[in-house]
Amino acid sequence: MQTTSDEVLISRIAGGDRLAMQVLYARHHVRVYRFVLRLVRNEATAEDLISDVFLDIWRQAGKFEGRSAPSTWMLSIARFKALSALRRRPDEELDDETAEQIVDHADDPETTLAKKEKGSVLKQCLTRLSADHREIIDLVYYHEKSVEEVAEIVGIPEATVKTRMFYARKRLSELLKEQGIDRGWP
Amino acid sequence: MNATKQEAPERQEIEELLPWHAAGTLSRSDAQRVEEALARDPELARRYELVRNELGETIHLNETLGAPSARAMEKLFAKIDAEPARSSGVPLGLSSRISEFFGSLSPRTLAWSASAAAVAILLQAGLIAGVMLNETKTPGYQTASAPTTDPGVGAFTLIRFAPQASSDDITKFLESNKLSIAAGPMAGGLYKVRVAVTGIPKGELARIVKKLQEDKVVSFIATTE
Image (spheres, rainbow over the protein chains, first blue to last red):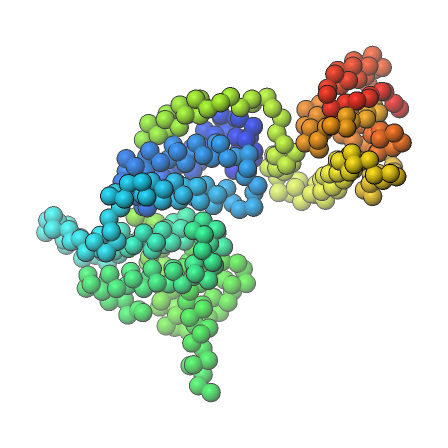
């Protein structure tokens, strides 16, 4: 079965097609929401931002020129909205260093045991990365963005994308080491 | 020279690409370079396993984040409904139509029709550019891309566009009336415009001409063979 491409949906949205907007929303809202949520770390804020992001998509559809993939374009809009929201309400984003130092004392023995599992610890460390590092890890691993696409979304040179990803992974290793897991790298 | 020192910058370069290799977003040539390096460098291969673990856990972490409630969608469409009316009847731009046209084709059909479509698009673009350049009333100007041949199939009119009509106006006029420029510009700034791909009765053609005459883009229109 052939599905309508995102490019075609966006061109229909530019013409005021509400149904095309529903299809595009259904197709992408979860991933966009998760991207925003990982940046703002607040479900209510992320949910509010989602409607703003897609409203911008509705408004700007006529300007989409297809130079980048639709998902890259949408994530760029989402990132802008998320960072704008964080600037408006700085209290909602914990200082990165503070966030990294937070120790969860509420774990019961069973949870603590579970966290001994490498995967759980790795996930926990992923949440403790700085905003820049979380963002690049998510874009590369979860949103499957190429070096060029990450550069476009984040607005940094491609060489910086590679080094930022490298340092994000290096920081992840340091956090794992603090939790007693030595990966032997870097 | 020490071989290890020679390899170090290359290993660093390849190592930086490992996350994208694991995610499958590298170009074919880069992916091949990484594969070759992984095959000859066991330490790099071990580090690649670390990357694959990170990839798996990042996906798992994101998948546990849930999804927005239905309220988000309701809120979005309430906002869209409150937006100033965007007439859905307005025809899409030429580029949108081209995009929609290509989107509707299967890859195989697309491959076959791409060349023909590209030629048609260039032809139309050249003609519209010709209209615009003609507006400058440069004496004796002729568009280089204006076709000199006419397949002669279909029903045609001769149109002279209003001097104040922009290329956008003309494009919209052609699209909304399902017209295409077959030839021109000819003497007097006239264009031969196809109104139907097959021949139609004279009465029907006259009715179309009368309707098109009412458009402000048109300064002169007449039927032709």
